[in-house]
Length: 308
Image: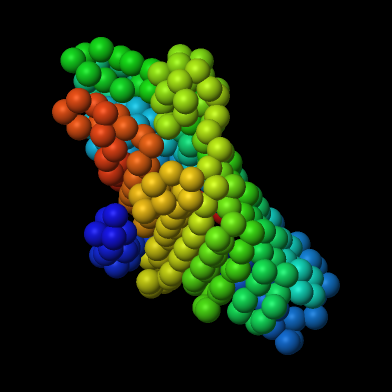
């Protein structure tokens, strides 16, 4: 696991090569909402906005538990919203990301939807200029069904809130620079939810067969990084780590997302996204399909990107 986490941080270092000026503007907006300059006399406590992107993409998957073909062509859309509150020592950061793709799979010549949503809300109370006492809520799942393909046979592998991950955490939020945020908590509750009866009966995603959820208690850390490389290139990354005290705490669950955008014109951009997941309870891989594995999803696309 130490080697895995080291490899993930190496990917971040190698990947920091591109991103979009639109995200740069969001970074400036977020920074202004969280820390005002002395000359800023505005009484506005909320800052809201977002971006929307529509891309033609080529994707590749490796050990992707949510389902999909190894290689695919798709039309992908991204909606990213934010609402930041700041007043005195109180702050409240809210983000919502929704990815939806219409995929043409190569193995069966079929078409299907591919999606993911991620809602995060974090309240902070300033202890020091760069350190907050914080509470965090995070919900991740998808809206549509996902499938795996084996010998030209399509099998259901995921569905709405199957899996779903609900996390409640209390800890410290450290912001050494405007680009970097590090949240750590030794007190975190996480529910792995599998609402689909067929999947829960199989014991998918670590739940007891027939049960619809699994409760976990452990330590959690999330690292968020947003960096402008140049005028037209930026990088955005997020790394989540969770250790379950109740079962194999040394087997750390990993969720990592990397997004690189290069601005080509005012509304046209090229995008490269790489997601990595390791969950010891997701045992769908290996020769017997009973082992955990590193899940990798890569999407390269070009299309429209607008800010509002």
